[in-house]
Amino acid sequence: MDEQGGQAGQMRTSTRDLGELRERVRSWLAGRLGRPVAVSRLSQPSGNGMSSETLLFDASWDSPEGRREVECVARMAPSSEAVPVFPDYDLGRQFEVMRMVRERAGVPAPRTLWFEPDPGPLGTPFFVMERLAGDVPPDVMPYTFEGWLLDASRADRDRLQRQSVEILARLHDAPFTAEELEVVEPGGSGGSALRRHVDAQRAYYEWAHGSMRIPVLERAFAWLEEHWPAAPGPAVLSWGDARIGNVMYRDFTPVAVLDWEMATVAPRELDIAWMIFLHQFFQEVAQVFGLPGLPDFMQREDVCRTYQEITGYRPRDMEFYEMYAALRHGVIMARVWHRRIHFGEQPMPDDPDDLVMHRAAIERMLGGSHGG
Image (cartoon, rainbow, N blue to C red; front, side, top):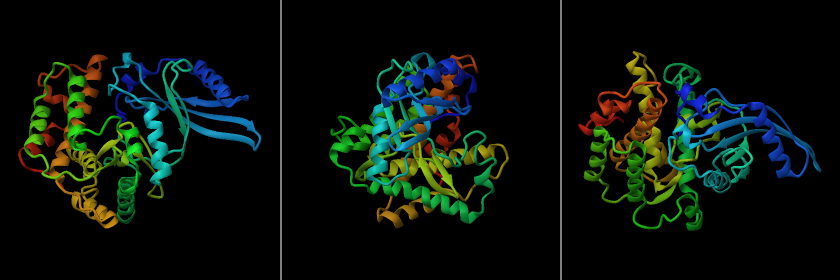
């Protein structure tokens, strides 16, 4: 999940000389292709997230079929000195998941080109995918504040919403084999998928915050145990970071589904609730600033109805999964704030619950008031 707000933190992850980096990319790709290669327009985007480092570049070479020119994106694992958001960056798994969902589920993930597990060429493992053009609903400034989605007609937003839900339907209905799901979640055959996922999230919370306790998140974990679904739905391949900010659109139609680092095996509701909650998060940020935002967009009833129309499956236990989405987002955002504190960008708050930007939403849900 790319967090795009911390420019100072970003600079600490990307201090290498771009000229030197371009030559290293050129040398690596020439060796990979076995022919001379030209690399141009190498840059690091200003909106680089903190969950990985991104390079943009163009590559061209002569092949038996003629001159090839490809616009590329390279995703690189961050160094430990950058205080990464996640404890593990299995770029090989991401690369394979993107290939699988594109080829087996018809999900428009970017075309994967090359994976390099050796940290030698660029100092860290990385993979390269094809770069596409389109519009992404921004996190900064949030799409609920300004921009093309806010300015769109209701009909166009409804079309974007439906086609975004169709991504989840297509992914979840794809007939992946047990061997393919093993790639996504190695060793994931013990117990229920939901139990494994929540246990892993608890372990991530412990890693991200060490001995510090964040009471509002602890209460949310306890709430989940008290409200555990009686019969969780069947496990499917889950995107994990299913939100419109990770989709590139043209004419309100998805052309690229991005950021597969949180992909897992889980009940369908995990993705559905995440898509609903992440919009709710940005909607509430807009309201804090006195802006109307998009109050009629990505509502639970509409999203679940569309999903059922497409798949025949009726999402259930949505209050549980929306609480879980709020908790997961809270753990990530608290880690991001910890990272900023580490780099001196802000002080540690007196109340550790203030590390969770949307603590009020979680407290409201703990009190029995859920959005929809």
